[in-house]
Amino acid sequence: MEKTDPLLRISHVRKSFGTLEVLKDISIDVYKGDVVSILGPSGSGKTTLLRCINFLERADGGSITLDDTTIDLKAAIREQASEVQRKTGFVFQNYALFRYMTVYDNIAFGLKVNKWKKSDIKKRVDELIELVGLSGMAKRYPSQLSGGQRQRVAFARALAPNPELLLLDEPFAAIDAKVRQELRSWLRDMITKVGITSIFVTHDQDEAIEVADEIIVTNKGHIEQIGTPRQIYREPETAFMAEFMGHPVHVDRINKIKGFNQLDDSVKAVLRPENVNITRLDEKVDSAASVEKGVVVGMLFMGK
Ligand code: ADP
Ligand code: MG
Image (cartoon, rainbow, N blue to C red; front, side, top):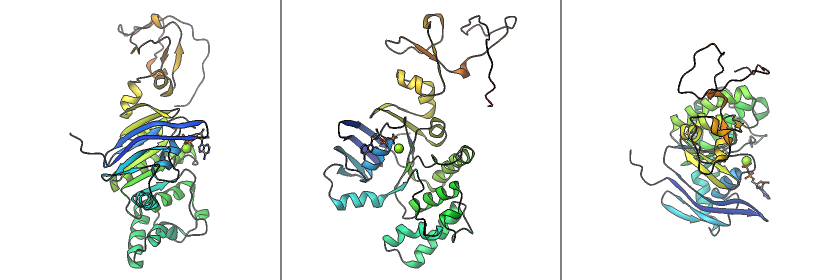
């Protein structure tokens, strides 16, 4: 399928804090309806990038093109910045709900700011409460909700004014592992249902793999690799990528082992545990595999 122009084009974004170059030259295209994940270690500039493209922070250079309108991130005037903010919804890492407002009022907030008619607000908020599965909870306050429910409210609030683009900054970071897992597939379903173009920022590779159509891996202010979750996982293009994805172990004697994808100038190798089988000496092994004799010196049960 031929792709048309991107809904959002991020071009050459740069940002430093003092002498620290947080974003070196970031360019990303996001197509309508896509869910793009920005995946990178903590401190790699993910939040700063989202804040720069949404004018919560001023970049030192670069531009965005949203809806065919190009805006200089450094020099934009206030009206241009507000226009971008109006077209984007933002879900933050920490809940950032208004504590003293009910679920209903939290979701209605942006609509009141945009001076929607009261009857339209009610219709829209009711619809969203239903959509995110919080029927019957309209009158509750954030303190009366679980972490997962609060993030559903935050999601509904961001969607309320019908933005064209949704920015999600580690929305599940503060939530228990089990609920976080459920929320991933919930979020993926919601985004598909609503059909909203989204940028989902996370440091958690499992989260990115499950939620995104395309993953952009950032490291130290630049992009390491862009690809589908499969490509990112199976075809790492740099040493950083090979070590970053999965739970690899280092192999010292790389010449002894067959079947590697060799990167230019490689001096060491990494191996993913899921690609290793242990068989007893008297068992037959796949002849294509690289085989070494060894002794199991310890065992540790690790659940799944
Ligand atoms: P991430 O979201 O990937 O964890 P951030 O974008 O939050 O990374 O931060 C990237 C780097 O920029 C970090 O080293 C952080 O300490 C620094 N940083 C972020 N915001 C500021 C700020 N307002 N002032 C100074 N340094 C900042
Ligand atoms: Mg962050």
